[in-house]
Amino acid sequence: MDVATLSEFLPALALAIALAASAGLRAWLPLLLAGGLARAGVLELGDSFSFLASNKALVLFGVATVIELVGDKVPTIDHALDAIGTPVRPAAGALLAASVLGTVSDPLTALVLGTAVGAPSALVPHAAKTALRTVSTTLTGGLANPILSFLEDAISLITFVLAVLVPVLVVALLGLTTYVLVRLFRRRKAEVPA
Image (cartoon, rainbow, N blue to C red; front, side, top):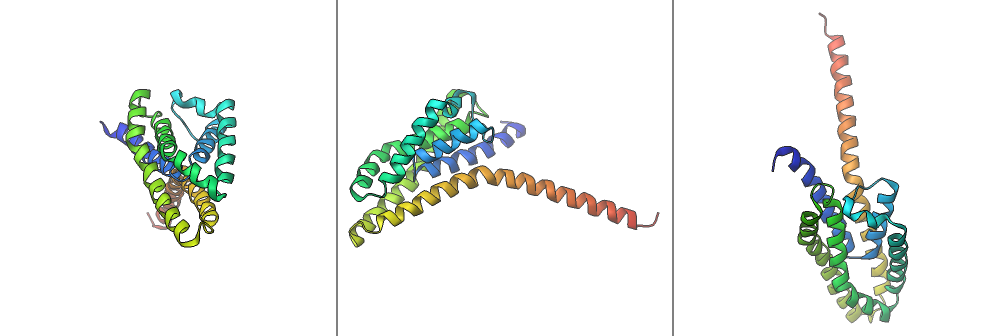
């Protein structure tokens, strides 16, 4: 792998892992956000994954997101959703990872790499959430679970937003730093007598 390819691949890999991790807490919210941002032209997905931005996918992800967010606040339903989420969240993480890796590789490679990095990246937060919920249910009889659910919503959303924004902020910071250094260099050059 040459330097140019590596310089495209590593940021895509980092984004893939971060988006997959956000799916470890909420399976459908990150898919909805990724599809919406892709539709708006903010997030680039591989061509084979453009279906994530389709009307049908956005409606399905939207409905599933509402069911997941609301249902997770109801004690009996949250256990059922968690059981269903055990295979769904790693799959969502793999899909998210593959979709952004599809911008720097062919669809098959993106799918294999997406599964290899996305599924475990989603499974780790999901396992931690499940363990925390078990402790919470044992200690509080499930009364603290809705509060934890709101925190999980926020962490999933913040992780997703940071995954998308941090590269943009880094580029903006590099641009600003370059601008300031060039201005300082020119000012210093103008102050030095010839």
